[in-house]
Length: 72
Image (cartoon, rainbow, N blue to C red; front, side, top):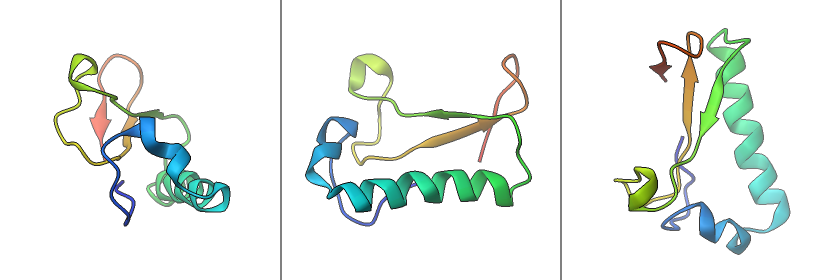
């Protein structure tokens, strides 16, 4: 899930007004619900040391249990 406005990572989430940040999280939850997911993880990699390779704030929605994960 990518927000429309560019920021490099979750570190810059404070640049968004609170209502915009809330809408982004609501969108992530709505996307998971529409995909029929009840159990899932939402992951944000922040910085190269955490595995971030795309330097634009985005979320990964991971499903299928904790062992084998499928990314939406």
